[in-house]
Image (cartoon, rainbow, N blue to C red; front, top):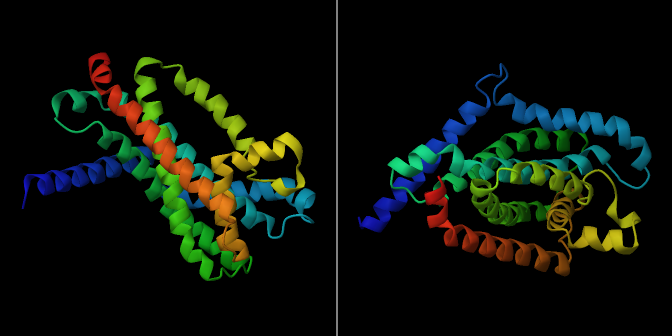
Length: 258
């Protein structure tokens, strides 16, 4: 076995260990533990359904599933980027004492949210059965959509984790940005009823593209439009490339600051 293969195996092992540690830490003070990853989307769906189901019942079929589809992807993105933002600062002791690539700590945080998504998908599958939504063959495309979203989130995570080392206020600014971003992602309202500039903003929003594509392949059994597929791929590739470039370029400065 070559040294490169040994290094890869070691890095994968470290990512798994860091992921296990993050999951234990996240649920250490919770009696229900990982079950919250299943209950949280269901509770959120119940609350939002009570509030908005009557308002959008005529324009959105199966509103609870419509909302839940968007919510689990939104949670994946926000969970990954928020936790990855502090990855380098939280692990500064290991960064200094152990010779490991900095990327591993960001990857571990993002991978942790992917694991949490797996638990949420259990609740999602149950709700599909409850509301008698039978996905067609197009559901096989859903892992591709989730992967593209994950690549996009990883690119954003690289940028945020680097910025947070130098500017702690990034965390507060990002929380404000996320609020605006959420309302522009059509998680709980129909985007096709909007027009003008607002409609254009929503359609170029990468998060909305991933959410809309997942709704198409799971709820409606259709392949996303060509323009949406192109946007998903371009957003994922461009943001990941930009994020990784910024991360690598500031690597030495980050180590000096830490």
